[in-house]
Image 1 (spheres, rainbow over the protein chains, first blue to last red):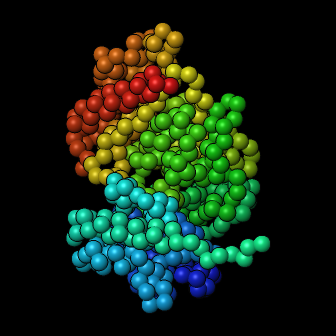
Image 2 (spheres, chains in turn blue, green):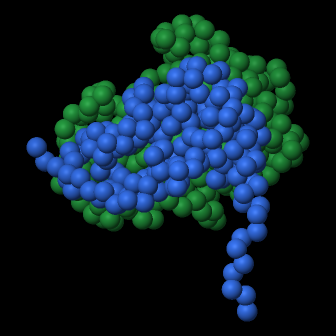
Image 3 (cartoon, rainbow over the protein chains, first blue to last red):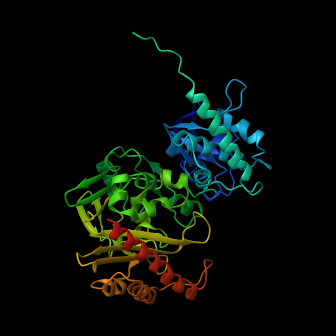
Length: 169
Length: 290
């Protein structure tokens, strides 16, 4: 069986593996790297549970080959918490009860991180459009939308704070 | 789902990609965004021996306005088209279409060239490019061919592309004054493939009558096609609801829908009338505002 050597940066850490070309990115993350926060759901690129970022763009990792990601920077749910502090989106899903069974949550959080990076102040309609590729069968989406709104407000507040003064001439 | 085995290469130039396609003729498939091809490979409906990934091939990802029309690189994603203001201000249909494909993740990676070369009869671009009278540029080691979109889609998942060619560019004309375009699609679920899709392009004369018309239909035949009977009926007529109803009826008569999980054939035919009418109305209102 032919394998290819690949190197990817996952949440800032360089990882290498020898993989068959047919290995899917979601299986690389889960089965090879042991990062099981990314969920494999429908396996048909419908449900979005497997959403991660590849070179900054949200992607369904069940519809990308591991070899396609060779050389890429990947962000997964495991990289969201920093220094023991939940990312504002993680905290907001907690605060707003934006999950019940939790299966869709990693994908929801990765997709809405991408959404808020591009659109820091989305309308409710834009949030709903933004998660059109992520299915939740528990919540009816109402609390997910609230969670994204809470996180958006917090992130805007955070980014509105003055940057540490740069050395000025 | 575990795909069957295949080899994978990532050439770094178009010439290298074309040489590989020539040397492995018939065994290789071109991989662009992957959102159409990989699902088929996972279902083992497609079993290529080699995937030629174009991600490292430069020069295929720009949208430019030339003197004779818009040139959209084969690797331009749906999202880039959706967000391209100058293109959308010329051709509203491009934004309509790109924004309705799949979902944000699909639009981040799926490409116009990949979608057209894949030629799923339910995919949206083929009807649109036909309605606009566009052209596909296909390259091989032996040269370049410019193939009109009309005639390019020969059957379900079949096109005029040779196995040794790459679809490098989609060309559509510039929009003149009093020109409007629209794409309307009926889908069973948000982000689903079209049950019926209608692409409409209208150019109005100084007298307000329709001077030129393009109508393309998605998902209601073996391949997306131009509704030529509807087009002939539109030209020379005033852009009224009666005109549009007659054109939509002609489009429905030319459609060859099949009964499937999206609905019975007769339902789809009725929907062709409705969706075509809506697309024509929207295109006309944009032409009148242009």
